[in-house]
Image (cartoon, rainbow, N blue to C red; front, side):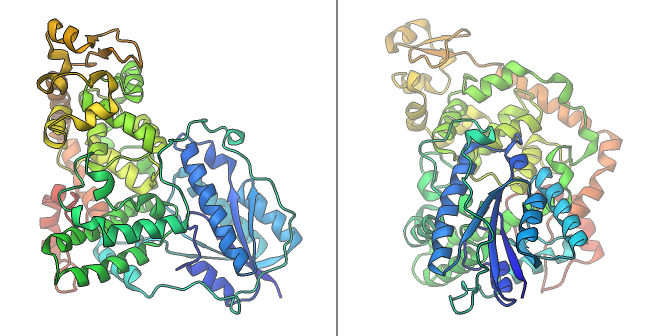
Length: 526
């Protein structure tokens, strides 16, 4: 009897794992994870991602050991690793979850498919999220999402149900981050990997922190505890989307009779779980949006004006805008930032700094522990105004600080140079008179040295005039007939769909939807 290979990717758990359950019904299994040098060489890869995965793999390996099995961790490109395994222990079946990743993982999957066809190996893939491969129309997408998230969860097979193939390989040393060419930096306060941590975060959110979700997720002060903090565990599959949706549904049913505020927070959280898959579906349907504008009419809008000095200052947290630089500092320490502050960073990069979204996106991908390509690249383009169908979203960093950090607690925590600046000058320190600067021990100047605790840089540009000029350039292009003509096809391919009485829209409703595309692609979902 030949074995089945269960290929773990971004699904580092045993619970609700369809490939493992399927493989167990066909005889012995080999559980495999491959560390792929080509993936870790990409500009969106970071050491924090690798360390989180290693932490998750260690727990996965321990869980398999309790079942009498072993997790084989190999280093190499997947077709070559599969070929080595096939030569040692021929197998007829490869099972895995689908993955909507970056361009390299997409090409990798195509190479694996070619290898399987050449070797006569059947490769069966299962949906990981509510994302539909080869989706022909968005009209039925919501039904697919609901069917996936409300299907019964699959328990881990028991030792009596799971038979392991004797190990064909000797143990192989796992490479370190530096061996893979990754930067040595790992955010010291980032979340740690593994299913146990993921389940604990889910339990803590639903039973304790959910009451602060509504109204607490916008401010970087309250968001670290008000947000669910499940994103990295969903990204790397330590928990399944299905179990999170169903646990949230169950808690919502319980809370509706107890707390209207908390139940509305959970409804908003469920909407964001829907949002999570809605955006990943965009990348699944159009992989090119990782590297080219959704609307090709915006090609060349920012590219010729690239300003390396502005980008370097943004990365270093030296833009001169306290809320921006505080967010960059928090990211470096924790690997996490709430959604509104992420949107503000992209907005500042795209408008007053006039930076093209792709290099900015690659940098932020490395900063975000929970980097999910489908959400990430869709949001980068939407916030940068290159989808061609969304309302222009421009976040003023001074106003965001006034709204979400009015007493300067967040700014003072992450920007030590500003800790003694009076409230009246804190959010716009460049306006401080020299006498006030001297009194609070900080000098605001264009040549403020990096890391100085007694100096603060001037803003890179005048915020108001640079933002106005950027919006004028974008809107001028948007009004051209060529750009206006390209909107309909994008709406048809990517816009969300309302569903009424269980039926998809009529043709007339679809036309009305096209005219309101900006609203459909906002954070308000069905």
